[in-house]
Each structure stands twice: as structure tokens, then as C-alpha cells.
Amino acid sequence: MNEQLISILGQILGSENFLTDPDECIYYSQDVYSAAPYVTQGVMRPGNLAELSAAIKIATDAGYALFPRGGGVSYTSGYLPSVAKSITIDTGRMNRILEINTQDMYVTVECGCRWVDLYEALKGSGLRTPFWGTLSGISATVGGSLSQNSIFFGSGHHGTAADSVTSMQVVTASGEVITTGSGAVKGGSPFFRHYGPDLTGLFTGDAGALAVKATITLRLMAETPHKAFGSFNFAGYDHMFAVMAALSRQGLASECFGFDPFLQSQRMKRESLVKDVKALSGVIKASGLKAGVKMALTGRRYMKDVQYSIHVITEHKYAGVADQYMNDIRAVVRDNHGEEIENTIPKVISATPFTPLNNMIGPEGERWSPVHALVPHSKAKALHDDIEAIYADEATDIEKYNIGRGYLYTTVGTSAVVIEPVFFWPDALMPFHHRHVEQAVLKGLKGFPENLEARAVVQRLRERLVDLFVAHGAVHFQIGKTYKYKQGLQQSSYQLVKKLKKQLDPDGRINPGSLGLWPKDEG
Image (spheres, helix red, strand yellow):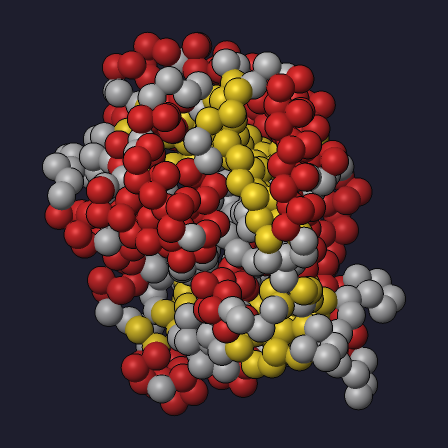
């Protein structure tokens, strides 16, 4: 990179906010799962919309491809450089909450605002956003979550992160600022999403390929302060899926998630006594001394014989309604051969929603990586069966290289379930892990040497599952450069996406390769 460009970007951003240090560039060229084929040549850290717009124009005019990055905690190469002449955009300095409008019921944030920051800002106001964060919300940003599209807190009732957005400001490859929703109306405000074609929707789930997010407006709603918690065990995943589908269709749970036996065992190994005490203090604050004491007496023994478990949270304005929802859930569970177990897990997650990202490695320091598929309820069991068939076919190498396999399950709205296979394998950690996992945790791990053979098997398993997902007509969040969006989409629909890309980014400077979009249709 020439000194003149470094100087110009330094003048726009401040010299300390354009990074070219080799170690920093290596870190920014990694995600949870992999390192990029190319190391970024620089990292721009804009502090506001004006800086972002000006820096994008300078960099693209100089022929650089730009790779926008939120909190960085993804695993599909979405922000990793795919060409040599690359610059990463770290949006972490654009982290302000710009407006909380309690009269018109919206909140506007900069793209680098973390979910935990928004949660803390709204605490005590009696208001929240419908979707209010990811499990990784201590690092994950609002902008990154919308580029990926994301789920978890509030998803049972309110769907994905994209479903809570009313308006955005995005910056195109030329530096032009585009406003969507009612915020685009002359003299208007970002209170409403729909006015003519839904331009906001174009920039949700786009894997950062169409433009760079700058500001985002989300709906506000009244809090639902009363909650009830339930956990249930099933002998097999067929009955578990039947219950998750019924709860989803009836809208009974604000969050409904589950684990297979292996992932449960990993969680029990991973968590320390210190973590238990921290979680216990959160439960005591949230639900009183009695619940905390019961948790302490129960400990982890209750999970010893659990097979497939689901954990649910109900919420409502009135306590009696939240409790009735839970009673309805218990009836569904009984009708499908499940049994109730201690509800420690949903209580802890509700009381301490945004925790350190120590779960991105295994309990002994193993590498960790998921893939996932979003399918309608009617297809969940068949997909799960076929995943297990692939594992049976690969059993020799899975055993040889000591590759652990588990699942996370989650419902989304009334019609969908996420199946997320996860892998653990003995392998060396990357600089990315050393920055995001707590040092106290890292110090207690034995760690592993580099294990390229095991890594190759995991990659093969991921690729086979991604192909399987296409065959089942699944869809995905955080498409990035991993899922086969282009191959799985009808040609006419994909052609429209290509035309939008060409209009907004004619030279392919914004995140080439994401969504399968390359300059001049290469790749």
C-alpha cells in the first residue's frame, strides 16, 4: 500500500485509526473458524458516517476491495478478505446510540453498537426492541447482525434481527449515502419501514455485499416483564422436534432452544464453579433468593441422564399469562412423551444474557465450529436423519481424529426451526481466539498442537453438510462465503440480486465473494 493512500486515510480517520501493523492485519483476517486466503493490507476504523463515506470513496477509487466487519464473531468468512488488494472496515468506533424516541417508539444506533450496549441503554425504561440480541451480544454489533441476519433473544415471538428494523443509512462503494424506510422521506423520520418497495430489506442478510451499514433504526415495544421458565427432556429428537413445532406454531415461547446429549455434556464440562457463582448471583437478582438457593442445591446433577433437552422462556405483561403459557407448554410436552427437568439453564440465560465468548472453544481448548440450516418444522426430522447418515458414513475419520459432534436447536417465529451441527476437534487456537476468550480461561487449558489432518476432516464434513442443506431447500443466516446461496436460489431471483449488486457496486469493491457475487461474474 502506497504511503500517499495511507496518509490520506490517516487524515480522514486520524492516523491511529488506519492500521497497517502486520499483527493487527493478521487478526482482522480471521474469524471464529478460519483465516482468510489473503491478509488485509489495512484496517480503517471510522468514527462516524462522514468519515465512513469519505474513506470508502478514497479506498475504492484507489482500487481496493473493502470488507466490512462488525463484532467479528462469525464463522462463514463473511468479512474475510477474498482478494489481495483489500482493506477491512472495523465499525467498532461507530458505537453510539443516536436517539431513543419513546414517543414514536424507535431507537437509532450506529452500526457498531453492540447488543449489550443497547440492552443497558434501554434498561429501566420499560421499553426494548422486539428482537434484542444474539447470544454473542457482548461482542456482536447491530450492524453485523443485520448483515448476517441473526436470531435468539425475542426470536420465538418476533423473528430475526431484520424483522425489527424500520430504517437504515448505508454507504455504497462510491461513498454515496442511501437512506431507507420512512427516514428517506424529505422532512420525515425513521418511524416506519414500508413506503413503496422495501429498500430496508435489501440490506438485511446481504452478507455486507451490497453496501456498508452506517446507522440503523429499530422498533421499540413495551417490555414484557413477567417470565416463566421450563426445561424438558426427550428420549429422541423426533418427539423433541414435535414439541418445538407445537410451541412455535402456538407462539408460546419467546425463546425455545435445545441441545443434544453431546453438546449438553460439553457445556457441563466447560462451565466452572466460578461461572456458576456468577450465574447464581444473576438469578438471585432477577428472580429472588429462593430460586437461587434451589439452583445451588441442585447443581449440575440434574443433567446427568438428560438426552435431548429443550429450554423455554415465556413472557408477558401479566405474570399469570406467562405462567399459563408455561402450563400449556407442559401439556404439550406430556402429550409427546417428554419429562420436565430443572429449569436452571433458561433462568441463567435470562438473568445473564450476554456473557463472555468462552464457548467459541471446547472445554479443553479444542477448536469449535458450527454450520446451520433453517427449515420448516415439517422438514426438521428428515434433515436431522440425513445429517446423522453423513456422520455414519464418515465414522472412521471422525473417530480417528477425535472429532466431537453436537447440535443446537432453536425455533424462529411460528414456522421455522434452526438445526445447528457443531464440531469440536483437537487443534491449535488462532490469534482470534486468544483475543476473544477470557485470559483466565485460556490459562487453565492444556491446548493442542496444530492438527491439519483433523482440520481437513472437519472442513469436509462442513462441505458435505452445506451440500445436504441445499438438497433439503434450507436457508441460512450469515451466508458469507460459505453457504451456497447462488446454487440454491432460482436463477431469476439470483439474477435480480446480481443486477442490484451491479447498480450499487459496479466494480465489485464491496466484499467480493459474499453471496457468491464476484466482479465480472468470476468465481
